[in-house]
Length: 307
Ligand SMILES: Cc1cc2nc3c(=O)[nH]c(=O)nc-3n(C[C@H](O)[C@H](O)[C@H](O)COP(=O)(O)OP(=O)(O)OC[C@H]3O[C@@H](n4cnc5c(N)ncnc54)[C@H](O)[C@@H]3O)c2cc1C
Image 1 (cartoon, rainbow, N blue to C red):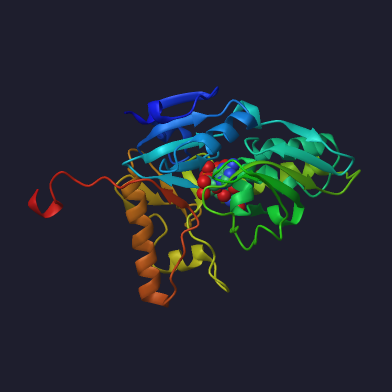
Image 2: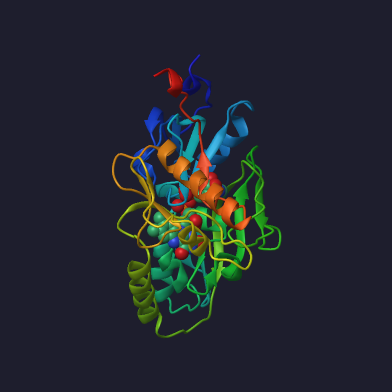
């Protein structure tokens, strides 16, 4: 029986063997065994509650921090679409945003509502769910500092309202249990703020001058180790511009990997691992991946040494 036939009745879009490369910023990787775009909250809840327990579930946001491996992802990949993008005002200092809404749109809505403190979200190319999961931050702002609460469904469809404290936030990290899916969140800022448009414009200029924003990339590859900058460690081992196949450490920001054309996920992962081992050897520091790597590697039909 195919995986599609094993799923409960759902209203959203289901596609077997769906290519994931177009859904990620790196533009690499294999297919989802099944891609599910729930119609709305109830549809997602039905899926989580009624699916067979042995079916793996992976959630993907805007794919700006994820490397999907070349062998694709087994089970069901969930992407939150139309039913999860609403952003509404809640009082004069807060917004409630669906987990599928782009962070940039939350920043725009905050500008319209004159709510200060949320402009940093304009510099994060992901969706709200990814920002909540990663505790995304930029230009002095961090998700945990503006979050009032977030709602998430657990792997059985149970709804939980979580505070930043519940989420155990740290630098680019949350303790969200495996398999839980954020559905919406309430963000608070400063009411009647001015100068938000100028702040968003400053952030846009800062980003384009320091990051390879027009490239196929996944943002910072490694977390900054305490007391160090990952890019400086990579630069010190000759990483700037170093490449493996179609994957390269960006010349512009050498903690960003880019797909310069025709890269595979394996090229990108090998490039990252090469940087990790060089930095470990030179400095005794084990860089930790910030990018989420998901899915299966492709095992070559013939081992390389027999080719
Ligand atoms: C050019 C560029 C610049 C960047 N600059 C920054 C920056 O300045 N600061 C920064 O913090 N990040 C930055 N990033 C990284 C990235 O944008 C953030 O980590 C972002 O929050 C990821 O969101 P996403 O929706 O793309 O998540 P994805 O990459 O799709 O997923 C990331 C993780 O979140 C999980 N996830 C996604 N949606 C949900 C959900 N609804 N519920 C539960 N888990 C979910 C995924 O399973 C995965 O583990 C940058 C990336 C790029 C490409």
